[in-house]
Amino acid sequence: MLIRKSHFIILVNTILLSFCCPIHAQTPQKINTIATIVNDMKLPHEATPNGVPYYYSWLKGPRINMGNNPKKFTAITAWGQLYVQDKGNPATNTRVQIRNTKTYMLSKRDKKWYLLQASTNVEGAAYLEDYSGNKSKPANIRNEKDGSISVIAGNGYNFHFWPKNGRANINSNDVGGVFTTVQARLIIDNPKKPNDNQKARYLLNVGGDYWQNLNALWDNFKTNGEVGMGRFKFVSTQWQAFNMTTVSPDEILRNPPPVE
Image 1 (cartoon, rainbow, N blue to C red):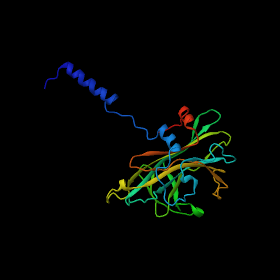
Image 2: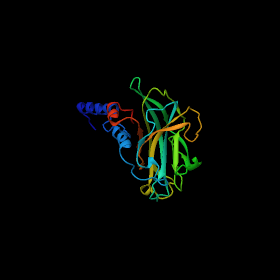
Image 3: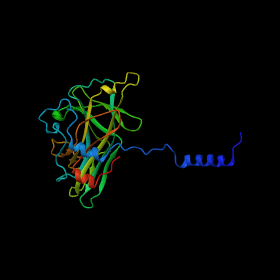
Image 4: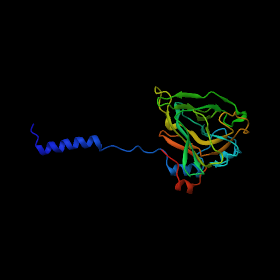
């Protein structure tokens, strides 16, 4: 087969271009957005988590509690909680995969966001849905290939979790804002059984707590206090972000925290 010189040059240039500038290359899409962060503190819960008494104030929607005033507490941690919906969860072969729990603090001093916690993995336990007596038991946790975990909740228990690498120190006089976030999605429990992800009714939200110090034990809220919590959203088969922030929507737009 004869190849003209001009055609050969075009062919070579095309090959070189495909190496340095792939035609179909795409920038990975961010899972979280500024709009998502704002809405997670603005919009109501998507549904009601099971077993939570109606008089619990956080059942009404997202809230800011201690906010940017940690008082004498010198440590902080993100946390999340996974529930089944109060109307039930028909899925029996679905798990919730959880990853990338992060905590950022906005400094009063220089108006910059600082990453305080970043954990691919989380740890936690199955707590009674109303947290009565702070009673818990080991959760149904499975380690996933990417270093994250997946879990099943229900039958009167939620899954309450926090970053596996522990709390972070803070300067209690320099807290101008807090932002906590986590990512979650639905996956199959047993691949040999039918996929019932579409039937799953799992709700998840995220929040943050101030603590007396890095190692203080829980003592009926004497050693810790809630920063705030975001809204409950249904977990879907696509990765999505769940957020909490103490910063106003206007300030978030002017000085957004890092998102991914």
